[in-house]
Length: 404
Image 1: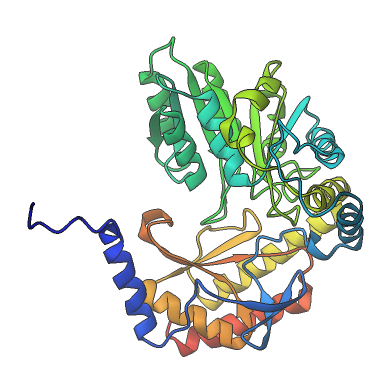
Image 2: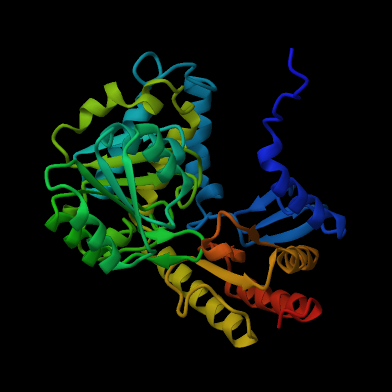
């Protein structure tokens, strides 16, 4: 018998563990273990016993406390119970799931809609199922983890290109064999910096090389585009996109994911997509709230206009205070404030929390170019006064911590 000790399967995480312990050793609160004791509204909660403005929840359209949405959830809970206890292909499809898919088809003007239990599963399932061994997935290097995981699960060849670089994307496509299956995966809004993809140009190039196109509109649905359909709508290319992926956990205000498409063979996905077939379906109350929220978002132009005003005001105010931001101009409801390093970022995060403001502390390796970010996500329910208050909080915390 060998004297060699068996490999510790957790040893691969030692660097991350040391980094986290180093931050906590400074006395900073754990930025990844915040507890909201009570949620008061889409923009405020009690965090650590303190009334706190929420600026890191992705609740872009503020639908979480909409009275019609809440009422729909209550009705479904009473009439259909707490859960389906089954997969969509067995006993897990209720009337509410069909109504939710109908709402999505109407919202996007598409022929097909397929609802998943999470947005992560939507990307995982669709990408892994349509792009398999021998196929190529051309994607932006800053793509979400669920996109990369979908490529790995499907065993497709991953071909990344530099972020939002149109020429780099074309070079990659040019090198792929003409007769190979090709899928280009793009995001409307990239969630770390809040920047928008040049979809019009990129989709045109994808089509030139015979590739199918999937656009993840998780962070643009509800807000961007005349009808809130996302960056593809704003760019006027809805008819050129083969698949749109989205989530219910942002603007829709609940949980779940979806894919919409006009592809004539799309319905076969219900039989071959493993993360759809082998997962319990969403509870009736969740799909009822989602369907109601989606239908209300169709008429959310006033909310969209107010959210744009909030975004412009916060971006301009932070820039004027001297903070370094992820984009030169506001492009979405996400505004990323760049920190000098992780330790100073954690200290600034805590200083803001003590002021009564919650933002996201985003760190490497999830961030582009190993940046540390304080990521702010605005809500249509933030008042003009709240945005002014937020700027005051950033100014006081930034000066106290030597960031500005």
